Amino acid sequence: MGTTQRPKVTQPEPSTALAYLDPRYWDERFSQEEQYEWFKDYSNFRHLIQAHVTSHSSVLELGCGNSQMCEELYKDGVANITCIDLSSVAVAKMENRLISRGFKDIKVLQADMLELPFGDECFDVVIEKGTMDVLFVDSGDPWNPKPETISKVMATLKGVHRVLKSDGIFISITFGQPHFRRPIFNAPDFNWSVEWTTFGETFHYFVYVLKKGRRSSYEDTTVKRFETPPINLLHEELESEDYVFRISVDEIS
Ligand SMILES: C[S@@+](CC[C@H](N)C(=O)[O-])C[C@H]1O[C@@H](n2cnc3c(N)ncnc32)[C@H](O)[C@@H]1O
Image: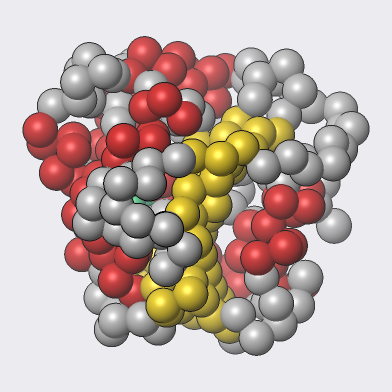
């Protein structure tokens, strides 16, 4: 379980990271690509997720693409999983893949993370890997992101906060560094606490854990780093496309 997936990437790499904002890019890409794991696969951060999910957790994954994360969560005992993606191609292929592999209980639907089509307080955990980073590829100055970027990010976060149960947890796996994510996660609209840690060796990815109902006051804008046992895995770092995306996001975060 959880071996690093680096299948053949047959789609052309985008000439600029702005393509990641175009839904047609994702449809075209997913029509050619069977599986690709952005950043790292689940085995690399499983130890950071397990503390926050149980077999009773209802989990929503934002922007599943053709990642295996939902399957790995399911294998870890989380049976109630819903995946969304904006790309109809990704959704259709994910549905087929999950059925063919026997994961028929995992629900997949086409939806925009900016307008989550779920009722209030219905998930224990919302998780995303690299999906919100897409919103930042056109943000301009990282210290002063464009209003359009902030507006999209806030729409997403407000939706996540709304669909989380009163003690729910949002897990964000990202390139985005704490000094850029903190002001957004700590906006007064939210009552979650914010903690983060990293994984990866040469390059560190960030895992933010936002616990709803746990912010002590709206003046409390603390972002705590939590320590976790390191895992030693041989990573391929700086792979081509991942690197293109990272550079772009690093420019803004
Ligand atoms: C960088 S990929 C990450 C895919 C997957 N999470 C992974 O770790 O491999 C971004 C994914 O977000 C999806 N996406 C982009 N904008 C979205 C939106 N507004 N709502 C839902 N999904 C979106 C894309 O179709 C793509 O599958």
